Length: 223
Image 1 (tube, rainbow, N blue to C red):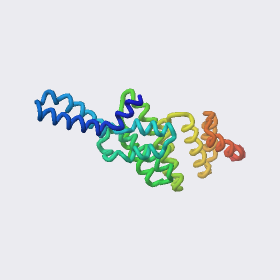
Image 2 (tube, rainbow, N blue to C red):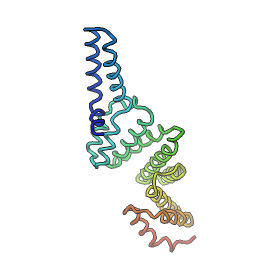
Image 3 (cartoon, rainbow, N blue to C red):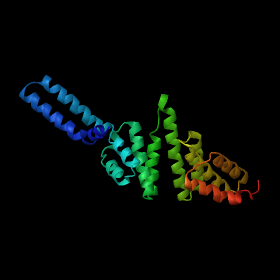
Image 4 (cartoon, rainbow, N blue to C red):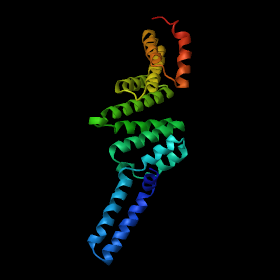
């Protein structure tokens, strides 16, 4: 696996070297002995531009190396050449990193690009819909940061319809909807969303704390 990561990291250079070697063999001998070098070199170069180094970014993020992940992400100079599903992940990751840096405008722009690129069928349809749901939840959070409550509600409802990847995200979505309904003084709906969030029994400390805070006064609400 480590060898494969090294190959991904240096495949552009290796591909160009192999193609140059193919050119030399072609010049000094003939085309057919050079053909394997041309072929492997072309595959490596195409892989660099069409697949990108997203595997390396994932490894950095799993290890908590956000600086390394951002450096690799910034090394992608031609994202428009990436295959569509990979381009979607690229923009989503850029949006996530922008959120960490509190660049909310950049985060919203990139997450919207990632969401717009999500389409597919067959076995990947559920995964794509869950990723779309997670992206729309993030857009809802960003809308709340900007105090765009109408936009936040629209995005979070869309996220719940699309489906979310785990109960923690789903509980977070229900709690945000609870807060939005409380703000609109739709207390019955707020209580319903709160019950749904609590029933998921989330374990993320921030979500657990939010449930405890809301629970202190939601029972006193009418409706």
